[in-house]
Image 1: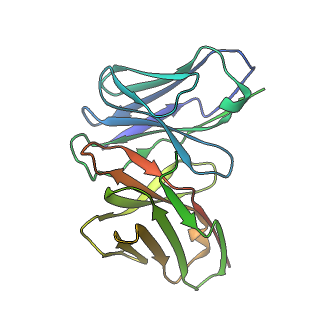
Image 2: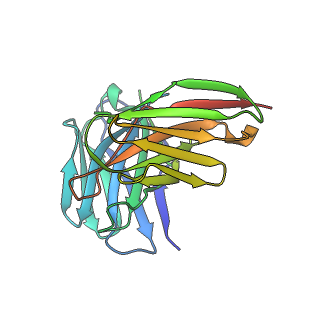
Length: 114
Length: 112
């Protein structure tokens, strides 16, 4: 069966520090991968999605970036965090080449920038 | 940007009652999905309805889709305290690849 791992679960970082959040998927090949951010009590904002290694689409211009160094690994990064980067970050995957495939989410990382 | 807007933003009902949540979206879609999120957790997929379908059932869930009005509704019948969660609609892009955009969510509280 497929599983998705996302870590860390919580993170407190000072403004201006770098960020690296990692997500890995097991049990499937060439998944579509996604990073979403959720502000407190709000909906999900699509940040990045990837349909293959090295193929990253950015939805929101900001100081975040994403990389997919391996087929089932998706990394969210920042060189210098802003206070506005605080939020709940969710990684998700879906089956490749199936347009109506549901998304499967990790348990999220709660990031607080102080 | 958000594709969907859920209505109401919050809903409080007694256990056993039905809960109805609505979702409106802006652009052409391939499919519409509903997800549930328990507080502080990831989202869980509930049900998907294709753009050529009008109604779909799954257990106590009933979803309708009206593409002419760009709207969908999720009905939870005979609600239980365990149904307390936030519910989100999500739309799949009609462009052929899997870009999924979420709405703002409805926070449902079921009072035992």
